[in-house]
Image: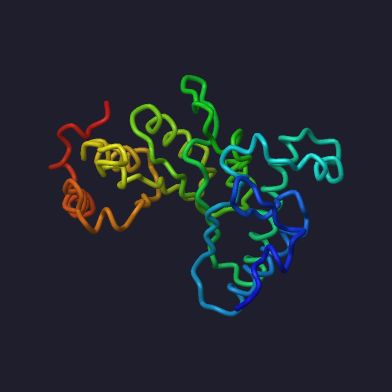
Length: 247
């Protein structure tokens, strides 16, 4: 078999809390990812390139990249530099895709809350501050065609933030990722109404659609969610309103 990336390109990789990560602060990381994406787009008839984990580790407080920051920081603060690293990778991937096939769409799945809102805190878990994804800027700068924010939250951890994504979409597509898996007993045991309300709210906010995490829970029709969606997508969603209306 082929050698792992950490053995072939050790300078691009870092072991952090038992998992291997590519180091965003090393400029060659972007080059390597661009080479992979260019090969896929050039050789195969794909419709899009979707970036899932385009961020720093989930809680990177102890992630030691200080020597790299001193070397490459160009006067930026540590957090500014980290954001610039992720943005640079996104920009380079986007332009490489569009240079090869302009019609191929580029998307990603940022954390479900972009940043703190005036009235609602992200509770220390958001794209911009926690994992250094300035995803709304990517939309405004035109280096991302669509976002699938991972919005596996309920109540006020969901509703204000879905509106925020849509208000800052810069005319690009937002498809909130809804946590259908949260219907499961071990994953939150949500009532079906929590999810149905989120589908309605996303639609009313003007979202381009919704993404479902994950297919398994939909296909097994947990708490009747698949039956709800058949009606919701038939254009006859009104019958399901009941508790689903947001006022």
